[in-house]
Amino acid sequence: MENNNGKTEYWRWLEYHRIMPGRDWKDAEIVTAGVDVGSVGSKAVILTDGEIYSWSVMRTGSNSSDSAKKALGWAMENTGLTLKDFKYIVGTGYGRVNVPMANRAITEIACHAKGANYIWGSTVKTVLDVGGQDVKAIRCDENGKVVSFLMNDKCAAGTGRGMEIIADLLQIPIEDVGKVSLSVPEEPEPVSSTCVVFAKTEAVGLLRKGWSKEKVLAAYIRAMAIRMTELIEKVGCEKDFVITGGQSKNIGLVHRVENILNVKRLPVPNLDETGRDPASAGAIGAALFAKALYEKSLKR
Amino acid sequence: MISAGIDMGTQRVKVAIIKDKEIIARKQNFSGFEPNKVVEQTFEEALESAKMSREEVKHVTATGAGVAMANFADSTISMMGADARAGAHFFSSARTVIDVGAEDARAVKCDEKGRMLDFIVNARCAAGAGTFIEAMARALEVKMEDMGSLSLKAARASPINASCVIFAESDVVSLIHREEPKTEIARAIFDAMAERVSSMVRRLGITPDIVLLGGVANDAGFVASLKRILGMELLIPEQPMYAGAVGAALIAAKRAERRH
Image (cartoon, rainbow over all chains, first blue to last red):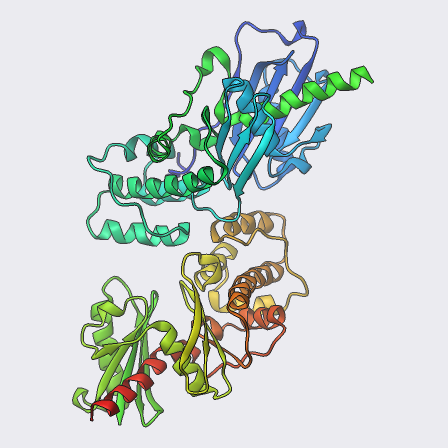
């Protein structure tokens, strides 16, 4: 977690890639990929006949098309796959127009709904996606088709990027913020500032007043949860409810959102057995659209 | 008649002493972590500069976000009330007063006597306040004072997600990587900030003349962007950062008169 200057980067989350064991892409008829270039994370998912074969989650660099190449390259690593083995590739996310190998770009809203439907099944009706620089509340039908949605992409409050900044300020590794925020004996009042810049100042003030780091963190995450539940309540929260995006791993946030809404999210599937990773829901959806589009092209 | 005004800003404490509506002393310091002590000291400095004793000051009125920290003030006034009074004092034709400070922005409608008629405030988003310039100067690795002159050299603005300070920070880093000129990035920052301020003012409704107050009114880059985006002239007094304190001092004088 240290950078070149020896400074600990508490915000830096772990990048990862996996290949599902016991599966060979050469046995598959249709190999497709979805590449989701988000503002903070880039995700690539490879499907063999519609089943998850491998995937990667990494940090987006300063150049979207490089990030797309890197993410897909990492998902292909040690598989023997080459670009020409893919029947169809769909790009999505904030940088979707800059996915050079993609046959088509599809909005991340559609991809997230589709991906959530795949991960948890047709009972999913409400998806909360907490991304790096946006928060989306999506209502979808039993086929994973978007019915309505609301998005905040204008403001860092409630986003993963905001969480990174507070983690760095409090010097708590981003992977631990959820757990640490739940360690306080009593839930504090939420921070009053919506804006992350002002919340940072407020957090420093609270620390000076003698609040523990854990308590300040809990107060921040509480405010985050309140902000995103407002978005969900506007679209209406129908069960089943799920959370996708990087912040789906923040159990402190998940717990508070569940409490405020009085609804439990569906549990995260076992990653090792299924490969159904809520952080890469958008890329899964993109890869599913890629398969459907390829099949449609065959019928013509 | 001698009176004083104190503006307990989020970033700086400002004190103005006036004698018969003439400003005779102005002092400011960073608010720091103990604004209650800073204000005492700043007030002493202002008295010294005015060559006055504390007893000669008939009334002290405080305003600003940290108004509660100015314990020794005789009375308080809202920031909007102080803005209206100051705006009309500097320019009798003022009907709309905009004040852009470090952490908030306000617009106030006033009459010819400097009475507040209506107002609107943004204190919830840093993208419409001075903090934005500060954060972006840091990201661009230039001095905050140089942001204005940089932006004035640009013929266009870089494309940037400037609705949020946090997002703009990461955009600026990528733009620097792509070797976009700093001048155009600076212009994008001021344009974005001016957009936010102007949309706030438009919600209130604009009646000319418009007066611009607050520390940010010193920044030529911001002023140029706001003029362009509003499509109107702006009247700016000398040392606009002290406007809140001057407004409070004028109100203090009125209140002292009333007591006699």
